Structure formats: structure tokens, C-alpha cells
Image (cartoon, rainbow, N blue to C red; front, side):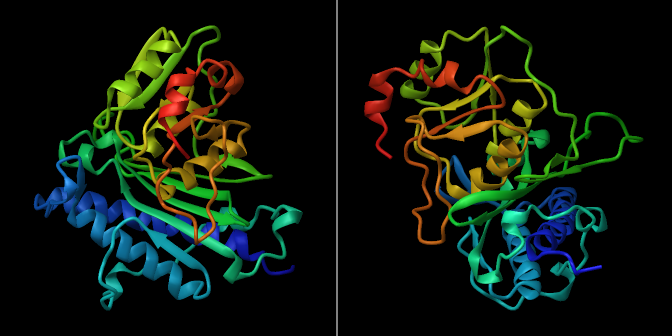
Length: 307
């Protein structure tokens, strides 16, 4: 049997690396010293978990795939990473899947991996643990083509017998796994949006969509999970603030199951290594009925958000 294609090896490794990351996230929380640092203000935080997880993910993947470009959220000194942070395992199940033909020839230097070590840091510091995700997105030719999302605290309120945490993964042309794909209730417009980065524009945009209900939660990864599990119909965020590492992994998983994510103008996101990190023109994402929401974004909102 031919050895698995590079893309499948990267995804299989990212899966195990994300599971290791989840263990670090839980250990930091359990130890009780989060080591919180404000980056640009009280809503832009970094903890010991963000720092250790990014070191673990980046070092583990760089060791196996030295020519891949890896871009993480946190600006960290490139210290020697201790061996206990290195994960060299992989998910055998993923290697059994056939790589889509258009990705079989990919070389290491053509891949860019976007890492958010802890998406929903503010919620993590406030104990809203189910909002937290670890995001590893894989891009090729500027497009998000594969992703891994780990929820370290999935099931944390389900009692001590429940297995804590889960890993969701997807590749365009294969599908997405680790969750039950569910569509939001038909005819209901449930909008999911930011919890800690709200603004007049964000709220005006949502109001114009005339939703039946609004869910406010932290983390882009968390919001996309709510879409693919049918808890919300559209993720609407009419504001800059989201970055490429927030959207790359969730985008790949959403697209792998037929959903769509763009900025507020309907432009797709680019993920080549030279691209600017900020998604300046906001986010609009749905599993189904994208056009319904896109056609109702007010022009005043669009004019306020320059890509």
C-alpha cells in the first residue's frame, strides 16, 4: 500500500497534537494559576494555557513537517520547547481515509497551518469552559482545506462518567467527523454572535436580520460548532476582530459539510502566509441558507466595514 498523502499525515498528526493541547488546557485550569496577561486590553487576554499550547502545537508539527509554514496567534519567544510538550502521535483512523485527488501532490512548503491555541480565552478565564476550543487550520493555495477543532471541556457538565473533551476534524472532499451533523430548525432564524466584543454595528446588523433568537457565546470555533450541530442558523459578526487563526479550521470543517463562511460583503477569506491576519470586514457563516442572510445585511453595515 502506498504511504498516505502528506495532507492526510498532517491532519492525522494535528488530531493527536490537538488532543495533547486539550490535556494542557485542562491541566493549567486544574492547577489554578492561569498566568493571565492583558495583550491589548481586558478583552484581549493571554494565559499560561495559550502560551504552552501554542508551543506544543507549533513545535510538534514543525518537528514532523519542517517545511510547513505555521502561524500562531501568540507572539512567543522561540525558546527550546521541553520534550514533555511534544506530541509525535497521529490518528490512525484519519490515515485510512483516501486523500482527495486534487490534494495528493501537495508539498510541505505549499501548506500554511493557522493555530489558535485557545479560542475563547476570555471565557476560559471566566470559567465558561464549554466555549473554549483549540483550532488547527490547514490551508493550501490560500484556501482552508482541512481543520481540527478540539473542545477540551465538551461534556464537562455531563457528570463524572462522561468522557471529557472531543476532537472534530474535516477535509474538503472527504467530509467532517467527530460530531452529529444537524440542521437548525426549519423556518427559525437563530443568530449566534459575539459575547465579549459587541458594538452598536454588531447589534444593528443582527436586528436588521429580524432573528427569532440571539445566542451570545465566546470563540469562533464554538460558534461554528453550534452551526453544524443545528443550535444556530447563522453566525453574524459585523466587526473587525476575528483573525485568520480563528476562522481557518472552522471554515474547513464548515465547508466540508456544505456550509459557507465569508466576510460581511460575501468575500471569501484568504489564508496564504503573506495575508494580513485581521478579518477586517467581519464574518457571516451558515450551514444552510447562506443567501437568505447575506441578502439582508444592510448596506450601512457593509459601508462601515472595509475589507
